[in-house]
Amino acid sequence: MEKIKIDNFIKIYENSFRESWDLPALTNYITGKTQTYGELARDIAMIHLFFESAGIRKGAKIALCGKDSPEWVLVYMAAVTYGAVIVPILSEFNPVDVAHIVNHSGADLLFISQSIWEHIEPDALLKVKGVLKLEDWELLDEKDGETMAKKLNSLREEFNRRYPDGFKAEDIRYADRENSELVEINYTSGTTGFSKGVMLTGENLAGNVCFGRDTQLHYRGSRALAFLPLAHAYGCAFDMLTPLAVGSHITLLGKMPSPRILLKALSEVKPNLIICVPLILEKIYKNQILPMLSKGAVRWTLAVPLLDNLVYAKIRKKLVDAFGGEFEEVIVGGAPLNHEVEEFLHKIKFPFTVGYGMTECGPLISYTPWREFIPGSSGRTLPIMESKIESPDPENIPGEICVRGTNVMRGYYKNQEATRKVLDKDGWLHTGDMGTRSADGTLFLRGRSKTMILSASGQNIYPEEIEAKLNNMPFVAESLVVERDGKLVALVYPDYDALDRLDVSIEDRDMKMEEVRNDLNRLLAPYEQISKIVLMPHEFEKTPKRSIKRFLYTAK
Image (cartoon, rainbow, N blue to C red; front, top):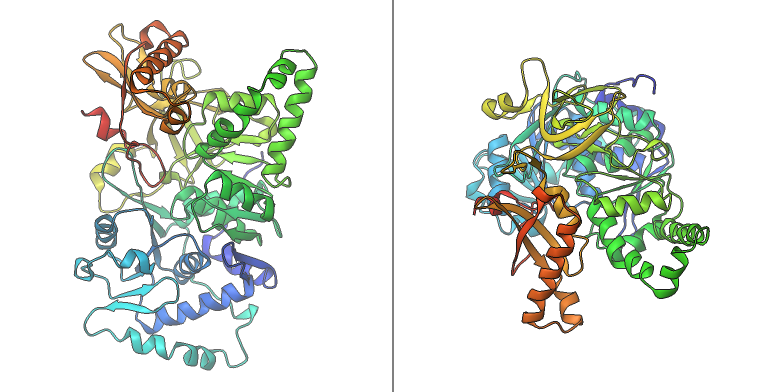
C-alpha cells in the first residue's frame, strides 16, 4: 500500500473535534447516554481550565485508573491535548501496583474510580498534588497547601467567564507539541515479572492512528464497540484513538465481555469493525460451534462433498449475524489465535485477520486486511515499520523478530538497563518473539524466545504450540507445558463443569486425562511428547490482559 502520512498527534484531534462537532462521539452502553464531539470538546476545555488553575505544567504526568467509560476517555484526551503525559493504569492491577506506578511515573494528578481508591492508602502516594474521582471529578485527596477544592468549586463560573458566548468549535485550541515529545507512559502488565513504563511519543501513537485512518479501519460516522481495556495499547489505539481521529461513534461496553454479554451488545451496536483478543473467538468456537458440528445430522452432512459447503455457509452467516452483521472484519490481536479455531474460521470464509503488536510499538507491528490474510501468519509488516529475523534462513528457520520504525517506543521510563536489553544502537527493537518472515514482510510467529525449550536432541520446542492443541481437547480448560527433569509435563486446569455434568469420578478423571495425553501425543512430533499431565486445583494466575503468568509456574 502507499506511504502513510504521519500528522501531528495533537492536531489530529483539534481538527477532528471541530469537523465532527455535531456527530455522536461516545455512548455509555450501560446507561445509553450519548455525547457528541462538541460536548466532548466542551468538557475537555473545562478540564484544561482546571489544569491551568491548578498549576499543572505542560509535560506533567497525569495518572488515570478506572474501568472503561466516557469519563475515562475524556480524561485521557484532555491530558494529551493539554500537552501533559498520560499514565493509564489497568484497573485490574492490585492497589500496591497502582500506588507504585503513580509514584514511579511522578504523576502530579491521579484520576481514579471510587471503588479502586477505597483500597489505596493516601499516604502511599508520595508526589501527587491531588486525587480526583474519575466519575464526577470530586476531590478525594490533596496535598497540604494545595487549593484544588476551591478551584473545582469555581470552575463552571470561570469557564462561563472565559467563554461568555458558550464554547464553540472555533474555540478548540490544543497544545503545540512536536511528535517527538512524550505523550504516554504505559506500564506493561508483562507475563515475565515486573512492570515497565513504556514511553510512547506523539510519533508512535500518530503512526498507529494514521495507519488506521489511511487504511479506513474506522471512518467518519462508522460505529465501534469498545470492550477491550482502553488502558491497554491495543484497545486504546483502535477502539479509541483511531475512531476519535476520524469522527466515528464509540460505544463503551463498560463491563466484562463474557460471550453472552458481548454477543448481545454486538447485535445492538452493529459495529463496522471489531477489535478482539483470541480468547473471545476461542470461547465462542468451543462452546457454540463445536457442539453444533458434533450433532449427528451435521456430522453426516459434512462428510458429503458439496453439502459441506452449504453447512459452512450457514455457520458463517450465523456467526456474522451474531457479531452484528455489519462489520468489514474482525481483527484478532494481543495473543496467538488457536490454530484449530483459525483453520475453521478460514474454512467457512469468516472475515477475520490476525495482527501482531506489542505495547512497545503502541501497539501495531503487522496487519493484513482479511481478504489478503494468510492463515498461520500475523500479517504483513506495516509500511511505516521494518522487520527482520535473527536467523541464518529467515523464511524457514525461526529466529527472534526485530522491528524498527515509526511506532517503536523511546524506551522504558527511568529504566535504561531494561531499555538497552531490547533496543540496540541501530534502533532495532528485539521483541522476544520467535518467528519466520516471508519476502514481502509477512510474519509467522512461533512463540516467545524466553519460553522456548531445547530438547535433549537439540530440537526447538515451542510450548505455546503444544498448549494450543491441548486446549482443544475434551475436559481441558487451560494448560501450560513446562520442562521437569528433562521431560515435558503439561499442567492442566480441567474443565470441572464438563466433568461434573458427566458425573466423572476422581478415578475416571485421571483415566480421561491419560486418554487426553495419548490423543495429544499422537498429534505431536517424537521430541514434543508429553510425559505426564499434572492437574491444577485452581485457574492459572493471569495478567490483566488475561495472559497466564508463565514465570510463576516454570520456575517451580
